[in-house]
Image (cartoon, rainbow, N blue to C red; front, top):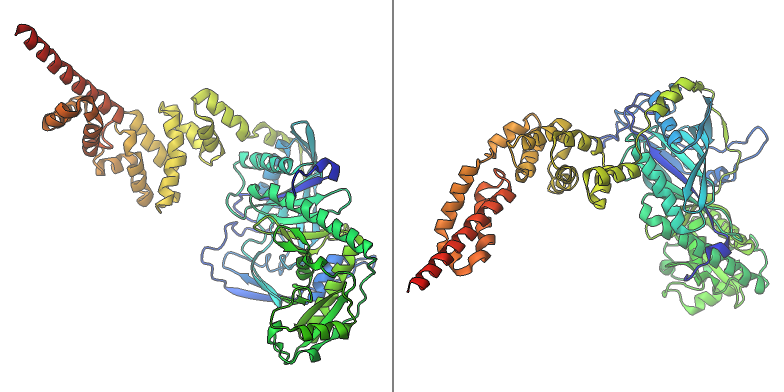
Length: 638
């Protein structure tokens, strides 16, 4: 969709950012916050979650739909998990380190922390928490971020336990890993005040920068996720979950706007056609098929059920997002019960015209109607088609409020209805935590420098380029960078070593995780003392990564990288010049490059290349000029 006027559409977008915290223990137990390295579970738990009424006799709509699917949940435990993750032991008190990090993030966002932190239970219906709820604690509110002329309010910061990690899923159930369950994370929620896709992306980047500035959050894929709440004036609020890369945020918002605009067009078209509510009438059309191979499943123990969607003829094929049609909206609903369906606007080639005519006649479908078919065990087929009927009827009203999952191409797919508002209630097993003024004062007095300010300082004070300053300011090595440059070495060299050189070693498979701060400091102490040159850094770090017990001095000595004195260098240069007189005579100053290569092959890592270049240039130019003077004197004498 080109030239979209988001102001006219009334676009409003809010963010929910979930960031894992880098603590030693989990939020409600002392289990490690690193995922199991063995990957081999030591036990399994099988459960079915049941829906229950509230004290007022109400049932959450999302929980009710999940209960109708009757799925089994399998939880895999490890030697790094405990009874708290199994929901067989009460939780321990809130992790104090996680509380401090959450408060630090809140203060960096200019928010007001609460006087006392109370833990609540939030209903979770997808099985990702063994208890059926997620523990969450309200930490702070009322923050603000300025993006150009727009002011975005930060509504809340909450401290939560991470959910279990989904390993696999099919129509029968879901398998979860328990090692991720309980890792502390913060949930940052903004007001729906972003008005363009670009503004949403800028907002996410700014909050991400603040989180990384603490140096106390986990890094890597899966440790931070963005949920995006999107609505337009005539549409509905849609929550798109699981956006893991900032690069996709703009595309996801743009395509959700496209989806809602196209769904509104479908609603208008249905009203023009005089479409009525779809009746819950399912017809068994199994007898129409002599050979069922063309519709996926053999008819043994199965039936072919059909439902008529009046006035939906042709609309099934309408594109609502790039590479997604309205049928995908229907298909997403029934996939929770069944993995596929067919419709008379697009049946397989194996199904003949006579069969299609027989289906339409049996169900009483006219030329403007569409028929959806499902082949499965009868109860499952009925559940699937009832889900289709529900979605078709929602199309008559406009856009249903939903929770959707982000797809890799920027589209989204249905997950479940938006949960009801009243899905939180007090956690009776966790004591509240008072937040004293002294605690806040201590945290406030040591707030970290924001990465954006750090980058600017690196450019001003150390003359780094913008790109290099951003790399080192954003990296986990920024504190080490500032420790090393005190030694008096080049800031640019240090920054490149801690970013580009480390990346090169990592790509080649060197175990850089074994390198410590002391290793790097030792390397640059030798460079500062003129005991090693920069050309030897890569080789020395490679040795230290593979044998961490060694020091930089020992590694340099074993590699034969002791610095050569000026006299030794000049002697070597003269040897090379003498052996290449013919080359110099033939090419003159153009011989510099090949001669430099020959010399550096012998002394790489033992001498500064700039010094070699300077001395070589001096010898070559001096020798050439001397020969010219001799030739000039001989001519005048003749």
